[in-house]
Image (tube, rainbow, N blue to C red; front, side, top):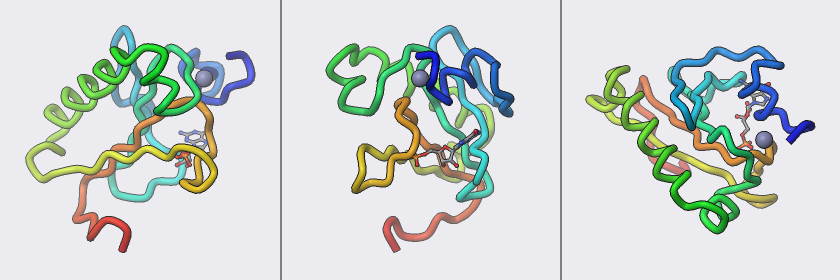
Length: 114
Ligand code: 5GP
Ligand code: ZN
């Protein structure tokens, strides 16, 4: 999608700090990190949100979680633990409408929702 921020990051039209890439997925550092490690994982094929990706092509979810497994194994996040979050729609505060999974790690994250 030509006017999608994350499609532009995927195409390197907007700079980002990429920490993971394979044929299907990239992972890049969030501009406003909420933890010491805060990486956004996005599929290279545009979908709007987690329900659309599940409806259109659920294999893409497997691609995303495969990438997260490889990244967390390699970076050491797996050893100490990490959190995966996705926001869908207005009530959750989704601001970028290209499906993305937040991976938070690198410190104790506290109780979810606290
Ligand atoms: P959402 O609120 O939609 O779940 O998450 C969007 C995330 O994208 C936010 O955490 C925000 O900090 C991040 N973000 C917004 N614009 C940019 C950008 O231009 N570059 C990067 N790396 N992250 C961004
Ligand atoms: Zn997009």
